[in-house]
Image (tube, rainbow, N blue to C red; front, side, top):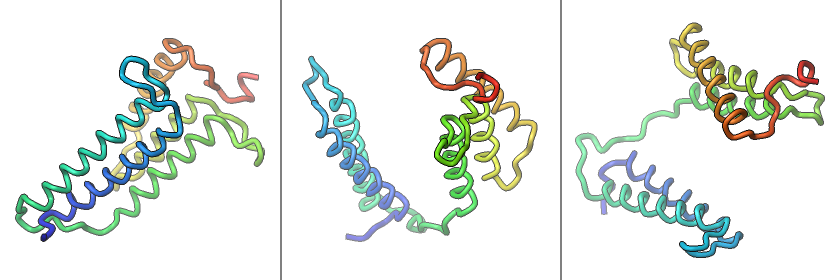
Amino acid sequence: MKIKSQTDFYSGLMFIGTGIAFAVGATNYKVGDASRMGPGYFPLMLGVLMAIVGLLITYKALIIETEDGDKIGNWAWRPLFYVITANIVFGVLLAGLHSFGVPAFGLIAAIYALTFIAAMAQPDWKFKPTFFLATVLALGSYLVFVKALALQFPVWPDFIAG
């Protein structure tokens, strides 16, 4: 059988692998059933659904002909670097890295850093739209997670909040 769309084929395999990993990982928890769901029920169902979607995408890649075979291009190293770095910096700024003496900077600073670093993945990123987006995300996150859901995590830097 010939692969007719490389991008669909490999993304389907990625969905299958991720779905199976979630489903297998969910079996470490009590699953329960639909009427009395345990903590493993949702990840198990999500993993199974993800694997099914992956199977459908992979099947489509083997059946439906595309114009140029949807070849996989080169790795986008710049966006990959900035997006991964943004997530790591977000985690470090949110909670701190006390073993290295880095204090927690809180939710607001972490969201601003995440937004600006991830925006640099674009070759022509601009400061003003990124600042506006970061402000909206920080305000929205504060209202949803701190005020509405009352989650307990640092909002402001340790040296300000005390």
